[in-house]
Image (cartoon, rainbow, N blue to C red; front, top):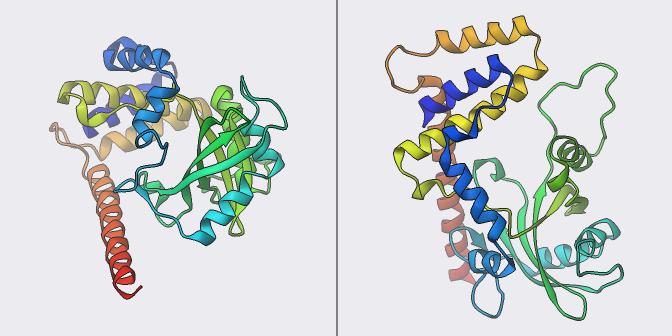
Length: 278
């Protein structure tokens, strides 16, 4: 997969055009599944039983009463409440009620940051709505001279999402939790992620190649042709002639995984210690 990541990225970087999705038939399967999904499918994936609760465990952790109160206040923010009531079968002014909330463990990029899953009831029919909330952090990318950029990090994230992918971007809003700028997005049943653990080795490599080519294509469009070629040469120089993944890419990913597992186990130890003394 790591080998395919680098090869796909280089192809996108230099060709600056989308890679034919036929190279990864798995993507077509996921797209077909996504188009057929309904709310009951999303509920089956993310919730437990008829009570419609977020299942606590390795992915979802319990939130304290103070955190829940802050989240309850957030969904009543006009911008966030407007997002919740904006879609079909909901009307402006419908009451929103926080049914359940959990801290969401979802990848290395969330370490040390606020990230929550919120289950909200909307209107008299109690139509369900699943939201993801995530802390916004300062950008590490430089700002082009003369470019306008929101000072609020959450507003910057949402503005970027609307520019790059308007459909999901329009399902996002900004708010504040514990004095931290956050952005909120609504999950739809069609937001189906690729379950990489169920793919064969060949399928996983093909998906990795395709997704990396998308990133490479995006970078290639932002670089001058000479700069893109220079960057590609730099990557190839650090790439061994064997089929082994580049050592720097392997090391970076392994370190991220190790850090994630360490933080998770440390949290479990602290949680167990607090529970014993409660």
